[in-house]
Length: 91
Image 1 (cartoon, rainbow, N blue to C red):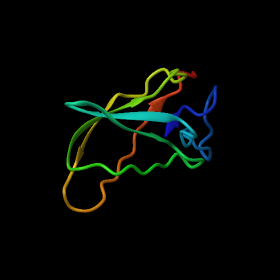
Image 2 (image 1 turned 120 degrees about the vertical axis):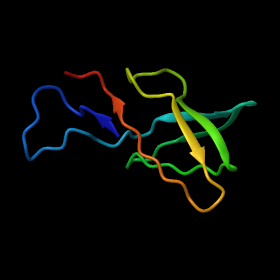
Image 3 (image 1 turned 135 degrees about the vertical axis):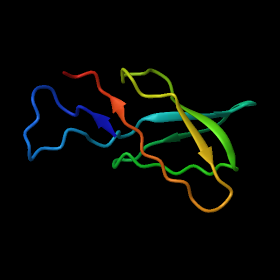
């Protein structure tokens, strides 16, 4: 997610966050870069990783002021879900 999603004040009935669409990220472990992924139109992604500790960073030109890097621990059992909040810099 990215917020604020628009400049100016937010109305009570209006969301202040939006999906982070079509943004590329890289995945690193202690050995270095191991995978890349791009969020979809809903800001979702799926990447297959072995259990362990990872750092997720925006890839390439960073048009977002504050978006990671994020630290992630992937467990051996099942799917691990994450939601990150990035700062658009709009005020």
